[in-house]
Structure formats: C-alpha cells, structure tokens
Length: 196
Image (cartoon, rainbow, N blue to C red; front, top):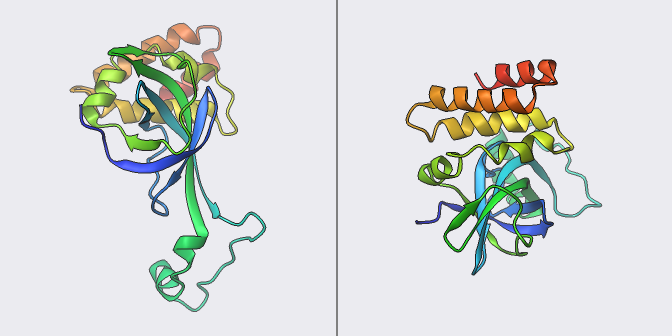
C-alpha cells in the first residue's frame, strides 16, 4: 500500500509514544488522527494527542509582532526568519503496529526510530486499522497531559470518516466503550456525547 503524505520526522521516541517535528510550521495532522512511521521491518501506528508550536531556542520566548499589521500573514511576510525560528511538533500515542504482514493492536517490540519519517494514514489504511477496536483500550487507559477522553473521541470521529457508514462505526465504537467503561457511567456518557 502506498504511504500517505510525509509530514514530519520522529525527534523523540519511547515504547508507548513518539514526538514528531513537522517540516512546515502549523502543518501538523489534526488531533485524533492516525499516523505511522516505519523502518525496514516494522510499521508503527499512533494517534496524534497533542500539537504544539514553539520557539526552537528554549531560552527565547516568542513575542507579539503584529500590532501595526493588517493580518497574520503580513507578520510572516515582514519577518521571514520566523519560519526558521519556530517549530510545530506533535505527540503520538502508539496504538499498534504491523510486523511482517500481520497487524497488531498493541505496543510494538521496539520504539520508533529517531529521524523516522512520519506519514498521515490514507483513508483505506485508517479503515483497515479501525476494523478492530482493540486499540481503544490503549487510548481509554492512558494518562496524558491533556484530557484523554478528548483524544479518544477525536480519534473515533476521525476514523468514522474512513468507513462507508460513519454512524454504524460510531455505534460499534460506543458499544465497545460501554463494555470498557461499564463501571464509570459519567465518563462513558461524556465520551458518547463527544463522538456523536
């Protein structure tokens, strides 16, 4: 299968997640989207859970520059160096991998490779990966620096668009969540509202 669009490179990696730096400022995949990185023997799939734009120099804060400008675009036109001084990174929670020809919905045997290319997944790939909802346990059980339920809901809304009938997919996902969160009705109801 052809790879999706290459958007970034892995700059930090662990067994459960990786951070990717975008090639272009503000061009990160959306929250909840499925992305992948690979090496010779392994494709690692993950869900985007946080996007951040920051100064490349940790000691230098970004300062406002547009007080006398008519648009945000003008700021970058007048200060072309900004595109090289700022970076957009995104964090990815690993939710599965392909080894050989087999797809697994659990953590891979090794982390993503540093400088590995990161691709957005094509719709067919998203549909194939989300045929099974076994990856949901990794999303539901994880502790993230942002609300994990927002990431889970964003992922399910994103994945639903890859299926022929998005509503049928979301109902199936809702039933799976109901089983997983049967002892936490408040959290379940909150999640179900977010995936409508």
